[in-house]
Amino acid sequence: MNETKILKAISEPTRLRVMYLLLKTKKELCGCELVDSLEVPQYNLTKHQDILINAGLIQSRKEGRWVNYSACNFQPGFISSLCQSILKLNGNIYAEDLKRFKIRLELRKNGKCHLGIQNKKFV
Image (cartoon, rainbow, N blue to C red; front, side, top):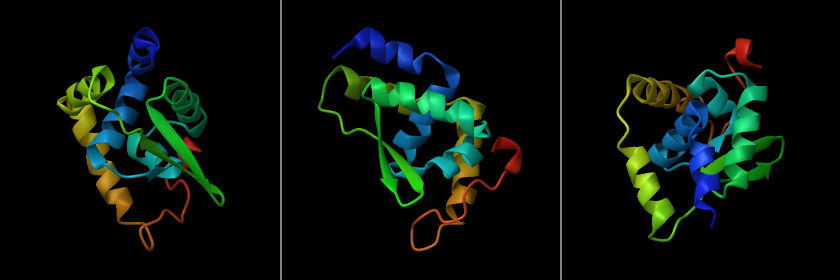
């Protein structure tokens, strides 16, 4: 484990928001849902997701044309403690992201994303 790499990965605000949403919801989220919930461009989000995957904080799973992301399961220790700290963040941005995600979640069919990005300015 490279603590420096992990800390660098979450030091960027968008990546911290991704981690917060994945940890808080405890769900596997489609990239489309993350784009709409975080209101960031898809190309920007993809770059941040790659950094989080490379740091071992999140994982991706392809399902048809969709790519789903989830927080990795961590053993007790440094990363687990870090994730618990992330969950304690209480800024307005995190609450707004979570609110948008809950609205976006209502668009799922049979528990899965099927629409793609709905906010077209972020494609």
